[in-house]
Length: 246
Length: 60
Image (cartoon, rainbow over all chains, first blue to last red; front, side):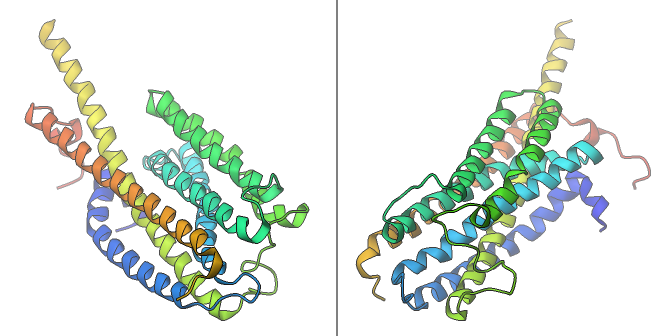
């Protein structure tokens, strides 16, 4: 099966039905391993046991940005190539991305209180992630507000690409501005500065959450394809009823 | 495993993540059931998609 074959929603549904059970099992195993390693990780010499919040905060923060990146590629697919699954992919990803962003904000806040002495600070990193969360909500509202799917797709794609400007701002906010948030300690020039005792469980959890995203995204895309089929069939039903009356 | 003086913050973080992930899974499962039920209802009313009625050109 080539990549172009996946452009057919029916083939996509067949493939999804085949691989989803395997993805669910792989995600569950990786999450279990990651949680076990996180529980066994030693306390940090400065942060104590609160370092355990890092193992869920950082993967959620990474995914908050990654999902918007996926949606930006899908937006290009909608505007440039008019790929039939591009808008389906973007629309299905938005609520999942919003959930990851919400979790990054909440866990970061719960980590910030004991470490910084405050739940919230209007600094560059926290504010730019909050803007990302609001943009996710705005996109979801846009898809719900515009009834015609093709018009909604184009408007959402443009908004997604404009919103992608926020991704480098989030990433480099800790370098460009004076902020409470610590600078990058994994994805940085010169390699990770984290000790292996923390880095290994963090990377396993990041992989587990990434697999969780892939699993949820494929399942949500399947639902969106079915929803569009239902809509098309309902319109046919209305048209047929109109013909019988005439 | 001792979580020290900030155990509440750590436990709350993990519980919130668990709750949101479970909500996402529940939302997707319920949505799938709803869409498949609607599709079956429409099919039982005799509504057939055009692509299901006409065999595609070049396909056996």
